[in-house]
Image (cartoon, rainbow, N blue to C red; front, top):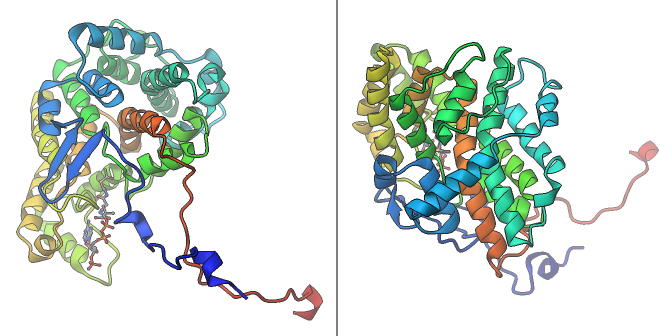
Length: 401
Ligand code: ACO
């Protein structure tokens, strides 16, 4: 016999909200989204302005500390991050335990989680100084860890960070450089990559950020919490969508096949969806997709890449934006629709796309993590459920069943 009042609280009422579509889990001062108007602000600054005029390091400072840095503050922040780019030598050995063909996101989940075994001195979450050291370590080491995951998968030696380069330039060199040759960072590629990092830096209470917050609500250490965020980001409905979007565009191949795929996306009996289209919050053009489309054109031109997939993407966008199904459901290209084209032109395999997303989103994760710990209203995350199983019944021994 179940006492309904005990199950559902004395008032007998609580919200049943699968996917948390209308439940706020926290207060936040970091990121604002107006999905109907296609607005995204970080600490009040529009994403378009940040992507055009700022740098990823400056945005990282902004998200973490709340204000844009002065020149001195920015230099000091970059210096601090640069000091933390190396990983423990034993962490490099950790990679050798993975199969060569492991998905780099699988490696990321493991290696980032393992950071808690290497940096015990920054796991006291009640100490603001240790929290900031852990935050800096995560932001600084993520490019090194991501580049090592790539190098491991292609069988090349790891490259140590070159701290004379920018955050993004250093990452590009660790990924594409080889020990025997000098690697010259292409400024257009560096700018595009930095912009992609800015566009992915934070997006308020998305699934992976909520996962980081939920994991940390139990007091878990920051490295473990960020590893949980990485695991969540991996899914194709979230961070895995850029990989899925490019695969879909390649499968479509030529503009004449687009109607077939649009028809499939509209067919209720076909589970197929246009990847890189639609968003839980944006019911208007994703402002990040606008910057991404422009950046794709710049990078393809600079690198002299003639990728037919870009034509397919633009034509598909055009057709969908004029189709009543997509208009009625307010489905627009999201940040993932064009990002894969840029990353592919730069030379990243599709399996690395979500890794790059994780690298950039680490900044948002640690900013949200710090905000949460400083918020006195926060308590352990513990959603309720609507129980629909059996009422109480007696156990029957196996020989009587
Ligand atoms: N193609 C075709 N139809 C779609 C698409 C799509 N990409 N997205 C949503 N729809 C339809 C659904 O079938 C549904 O139709 P119905 O009302 O007739 O049942 C309606 O639009 C609403 O879809 P939901 O899944 O309920 O919307 P939700 O807000 O839960 O999902 C999501 C958002 C997961 C992003 C969805 O649009 C999707 O699956 N898109 C493709 C994957 C993708 O690009 N993900 C990246 C998101 S951005 C990011 O994570 C950085």
